[in-house]
Length: 324
Image 1: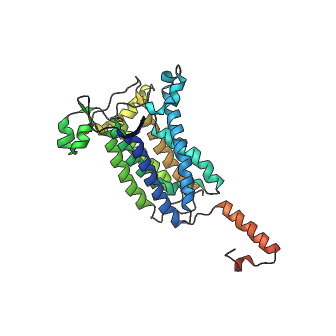
Image 2: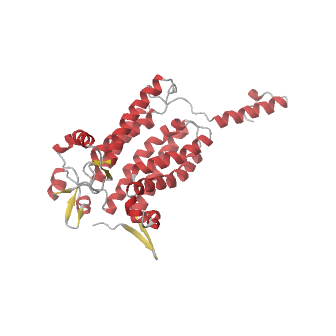
Image 3: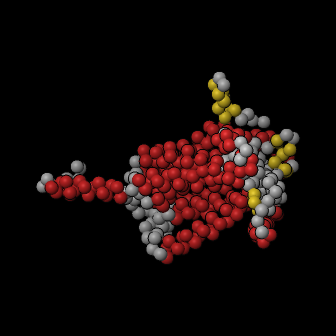
C-alpha cells in the first residue's frame, strides 16, 4: 500500500493529496495561460483567477457537503471548519469557484462565458489529475470486486491493484474511471474549440455536459455517495438510466439510507439544463459571438476612450499615435 504522506517537516505532514491537487491546479493554469495568449490576455489575469478560484472552490465544496450531512455537524460546529478530516464535494467546488471568479471576471470587464471557455480544458484536466489524490487516500472508490477482475479483466498495474486492497477487500477504482473519462473529455474539448460552429460559452457548457454524463454513471458504483430520499418514480428513473452499467458493474451501496444519489440527480439536471441553455442562447441571439472571435474587456474600451478624449483635448491625433 502506498503511503498518503509524502514527507514530513517536523510536526507538519505534507500529504500526496495536497501535492496532487496543487499539481492539478498548476497544469490547469498553464493550459489556460497558453490559450489566453491567443486572445492577448495577460498571464497575471489567470494567476489571479487561480488565487480566487481555489479558496472559493474549497469553501463551496465544504458548504455543499456539510449541507447534506448537517446532522453530523450541528452538534459540533467546529468540525465544519476541519476539512482535513475529509468531507468535500466536487459539484460544490465548481459552484464555489464559479461564484468567486465571476466577480473578478466582471470587475476586469470580461464576459464570463468567454473566459470560462478558456478555462474549461484546464478544469477537466485538473479534475483528471486531482482524482489521483483520492487514489492515494484510498477513498472515492466503488464497491467490492475480485482481485482477478482488477488484474485480468481491467489489466491494471500492480500499484493500482494493491492500493485498491483496503483492509483485505478489493474495490472498484472509481477514481481511475473518472480520471480516464476526464482525459477523454479534454481531447473532446480541445477538438471542439477549433471548430468554426462553436459559439462563445458553448465550450464551457460542453465541459459540464461531458463531465456530468461521466459522473452520473461512475457515481452509481461508489459507496460514499451523498443520497436523499426521493419519490419512488424518481428512484426508478435513476435506476433505469443507470441500468446499462449493470452489464459490467454492480451498483454500490447507498451509504446514508436514501434511495437517490444526489450527484446522479444533479448530473442529470445539469445535462438537461446545459442542452436547453445552448438552444435558448442561440435562438435568443445571446450566442452570436464565435469562440474564435476576439475577447475585449469593456474596461479596456473605456480606458481607450478616456485616452482618446484626453488626446483630443490636447490636440493630438490619437489614431496616429497608437503607442500612447
